[in-house]
Image (cartoon, rainbow, N blue to C red):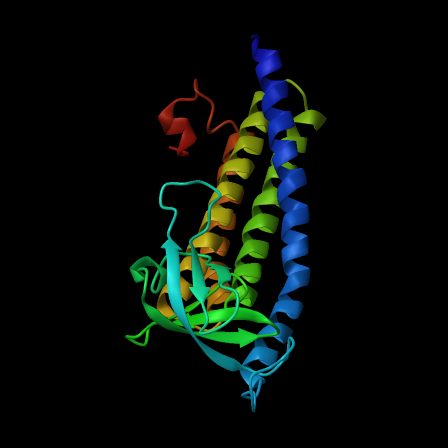
Length: 249
């Protein structure tokens, strides 16, 4: 495969990445308000006066016995799950976004308490008091949507700019290097947004901590991106440029 073909494939790949990441980020951004409203509704929900006979906005705590529990460790696209049996009636099958802290320690015959909201088990509490949201739980979704929006939009924009740039100046090595600088700094922007989301979740910080952590890091990366892109345009990143010329000596 020739060098020209390789460049075309690389450009197309980055543009495809941008075409996927940007819409995903926009959708995540629009879902933040909906997720916040759902979380507020859950936190403000009253306790049910009696067992709800149909899906209800009140909270009901139901005792269950664990029939099966499987973390699906090492299995791709298989979320942790458990089958819970009430004192009477059909068992409930619930999935979880992650294995800890409850589903990873569940065993057959364990007794747990499930919080039912709008006809779904949204939280499970074990005998030791550990709590875990199920995949239907409303807590944490606003933070996930915000982190996803920051990561996808910042990375997608950089991939788009870095992918389109060489098309306007074909064959220009310096512009191609500047475009590469933009693309790979975009990877850093997306990665730092994910790290900010991880730090917020691990420390149970409020949602505003995500942009508070990511913002300064993003500014540093943007400053680095501009500096290196300008350096590439000036030829300071050319392979045949002497080091003393690259550093301005």
